[in-house]
Length: 419
Ligand code: 2M8
Image 1 (tube, rainbow, N blue to C red):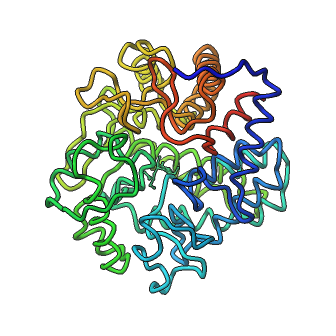
Image 2 (tube, rainbow, N blue to C red; image 1 turned 90 degrees about the vertical axis):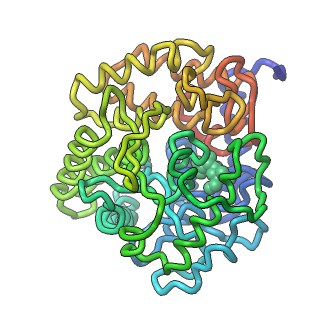
């Protein structure tokens, strides 16, 4: 494993800020130079959270840059292309310019975990900036209305993802079954090193799914009636619930009614319990109405809810701390349970540890008053970045870095962990 000279907290914080400075393009922070040269949606929310204390001006600009890409439907796209930098799948794949609801800036046609309400709340908590809340609140309320209207494909109160890219955990084994049910596709498109990603040919299916949705005009009716990939994911919905609660708290500042946001959060909670819980939270595949019985780090997303009943909190935390997850690895938190046959410590969301999911779980520990768990997550994550740098992800057993270097959310959330 690569050795780095020992760095104290102040030096680590300075390094994090300089990575974020280098990744700032003038309108957004790219996730990493080279591999991800545009603005990614939930990456930007994490960057805003990390910068809230240190550079609130930049955190605000980050969120506004992303909101420039919001569609008139309320959808916040998973990528905003502020520059012509080459990337696949880029604007030629998404053709947002052909859609009447798309903004002037080019974007993808998919969405991403709706963390932005929580990011706005975080920023408010650290700055007390009422004016920014008033400015951003309506856009985030519209985002939530889009999810409730166009994405409740199961009709029970949860938002469905319609592509693995929408989950944020692209290569997670939770999508293997749904992808395997699609026709075999051989485009041969390659934007990433597949040795680090999915073991099969599924990358071509990702592109095929995106093109089908685009060719259907990004219509909600098509998603409901025809699109072959529709999954209720506990991480996406756990994050949405937390953002609903955030908007409920911010509503009075924005001159809005908190009640619809409280009610939305309650609907999501009861649907998570009814539809995704069975000893831990699993994803539900709506195309064959079954739970996808593999426990991933995404299954802990509902812990972000302070109102989650004690039974689910205690059981989920037991699983998290057990030898299925943190109990067996030297570092928090493997992205997939290690006893699963699909677990692979070398492939992206199929095993490695990620700073952003560690941060979300630390937040969950804080909302439930689980101090020792919170400390373990904080210290373990800081150990990872101290030893291996701001890598995209990490081997959960030996802590070595994987994926790209100078990765923005790893740097930004380190700032928050150091505070
Ligand atoms: C990864 O996703 C992109 C596609 O959007 C990829 O696999 O190339 C994921 O880790 C996702 O969560 C993240 O937002 C994105 C940019 O960091 O990279």
